[in-house]
Image (cartoon, rainbow, N blue to C red; front, side):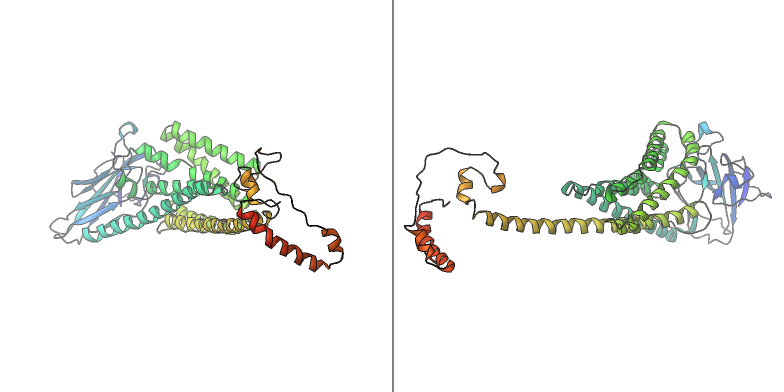
Length: 433
């Protein structure tokens, strides 16, 4: 692209060229801050067709001119910071070439706020139907992925209220809920489609608050019951202060701080890796599930970072990676929940057997007389006072007779005796002690 520094709507060719998409720092301006124009002359188009141009979302401001006509814009371009309004959405602009099949595109770009100001993702140019299909498919795919992440995270969040023994589930759920929300503001079309009137500073705040990494780190501590107190407390304190700063300071100030906060993000990454590896070595419960879930996020995050830094071409995989990561966590949680329910069923059956056995020693009728539903409700010293008949029975010469009988014969004699009197007593609601 031909580049014109500190000029808008420039059209004449000159010797300076610059990479576009790219940063103003890669031009003769040699800074992330400033303004200029990129110009591109295209030949061989079909004059009978309408063409579409998609420029991805960027916090810089941009306007597009095709053959002298303005066809789209992001934000509001300006020659100074006071007049500029950064963008929050992508551009989908339509144009038709001249009768000779030519078009001269001019991209006016300004950036006075963001340290990586410019256009970084690929620009799509083609027949309107084909480009719209690309735009629609991208929107649908990312929308489904983020909706799935948010749905699973919300399910885990609700599950916590029914199974509070696994408190770490709440922190995992919050981490991925914020991942889904933030991602809609990082990927070109979603948030502006849902909230077309979003102010750019709101988008800036949502993109900068580090809540997902905070919640994920806390969830590892809760789940594995493992942490190194000083690094853990230091990282969470710094991240919390940075979160407060994002809400309190100007975008320019936060952009300067963010350069250094990247080292904190790396420290979070290393700390969590150490925790996960330690958990694996100690063979702690849940360690394998969480390790593989975290590794997925780390790998796709590193890959996307290279793309974002223009070190390699490709598509962003963080949405898909986040989905697979939370699916692993969800399977782990459901397995824990299922195992717990099985244990509860076993304990319930054992409790029934124990209660049935205890009735032999403490009759159920006695428990009812004490106005209790179960023997578990009985407390030491509890009593009730009431009037009732008492029948005391003795077997004449039982001791002398037992001395002349075998043990088995004694048992047989007693069983015959009880078989005779017990039904009569119970018929009259008696309690046998």
